[in-house]
Length: 451
Ligand SMILES: *[C@@H]1O[C@H](CO)[C@@H](O)[C@H](O)[C@H]1NC(C)=O
Image 1 (cartoon, rainbow, N blue to C red):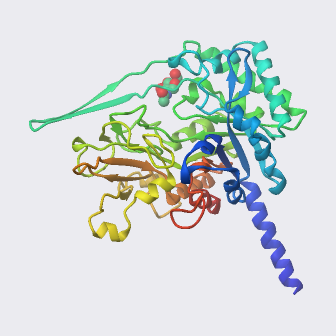
Image 2: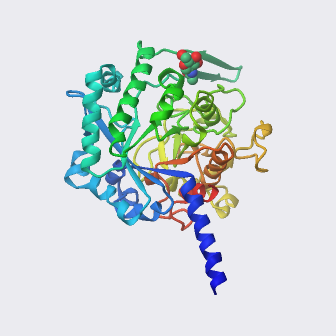
Image 3: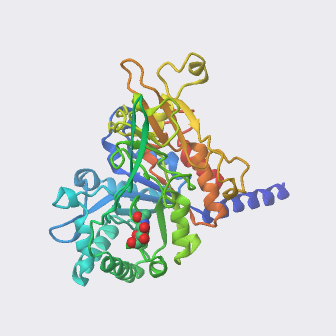
């Protein structure tokens, strides 16, 4: 009996230790509260997720450009309906869970110019006064609502897609051209990089007294080497989440679809269009490995396939804008994981010729095996896609997405590299109802078990 207890104690202690050691940062986007039907996500759905999360990140607050202060982006929900408080209160039921408020995240469009909606994120950091104003307002907000800290999902300008390949095919020939072009929206990048470092240092000084956490989220398509100095930032940040996805999106790349979140470099793509490149950049420039968190998406990007897209579905492929909106998320070009899974053909439907459902393909490209020695499965390192050819009145659809297996691969990669953990972006687009297989949160669950 006693031996049993001792054994049990060690098992529990080990489980606790393993869990405490690597982070699972769970993003929660409060916009999910406004979705329809099965997509509507209220706070009760969070609870089954939180046993797997070390951190919960509330997205998103913004900047008030009139006074350089932080402001809720959804005052009615966040403040009037008390959502800030209810979310931060979850700590009581999940001791050990740290709850942060995040600012930016690509959700803040408070800039005055449509073309330059991120402007306040540069203005704020440009002077000592405006930085201090922002920091003080953020600290007040964080403390008022009992958050454990602030996440800077800072909105710097994104690079323009470099590669716009237009495939003109006809009965006479087929031409592929590559037009490389790059412009920088920001002509003060050097200054902004230094100012951001100062900002983070000042933030840390202000937060230190209260033991508040300060973290950074690097948004997709923001060039890290332009805006971030990992070596200088490292001592002042608790961790950095690299959002290694949205390499391709229907908004940025309306004419060509490709894997949106590959872990490794694919042949014929830019060497930086993958998560491994981003991780290596931060490692090589002085961010300690245990402060780097690998960001994994739970959502799919979708495009409309046409007769010009070919029959194989193999990316990259010419495409015609975003795919149809999903029933729950209601946004063209985007599907939540449970919207994707319900569109995929079951074995019976495959036998019957798909019946309008999607054909799922885990990456068939078995190249670059040398990068991956720790796992015998080399077929899923770029991601998963699924597609439906156009037929009659039914438009075609091409979908790049993360499933439980590819997400698990990324978690294993994070472990092999000694990273601090992984982030799930975000939990409201995982299968929080268990519609796919009956298990709730299959993607979150899969990464948790790999750590
Ligand atoms: C990022 O910026 C650096 C420095 O300007 C440049 O050399 C590099 O090509 C850029 N990378 C991307 C992905 O645009």
